[in-house]
Image (cartoon, rainbow, N blue to C red):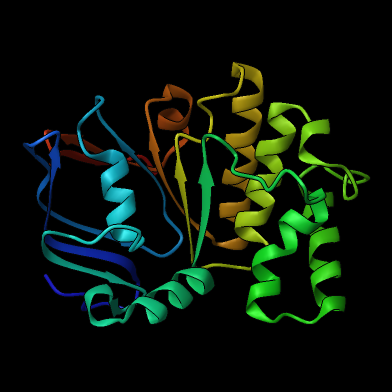
Length: 234
């Protein structure tokens, strides 16, 4: 099933992932074949232990597969050295985590521009992009605040801004609404869907949240490390 179309941003072929839990072997992924096209808004769902987070980790190269192959933007992840993979991930993937993972000693602006700093984006362009994305996400006037001075919803918006400001090909979101109340969660998802529609950014979620499932255009259901169901909701 090799990545034979330019429209695919992710292709997995026979992906397996095994690890040991206190000496007990666990088959987290068992032969996953999946293609995700550019511009999709896809939710990976399933019960706890189904392999959702593991799948996000292997398609991003944060974790190595035990077997099979992963292509991201037409690059075979296993063919890259550690530094090549790290640089490739920095330039192609934005991450959103349920715990926000903001750097507490940095301001909102410094958190958002951090990846661009690593990419060598000039200061003036970094500032303009940060200003634009904060305005777009309803955070105008928050640039100089520290994360501890923000609500949970505001912190997650900053995390979204950080994930997309460098214009990655793909945004991976692991349970992004888990720590938010229902209203804030809905606002965040609708905001990400708007970014998907207007900017064409590909979003892939790992989630239990029915609010995300209802708004996703594609649902991939994992069960016991395998794809049980794959449905499109256009």
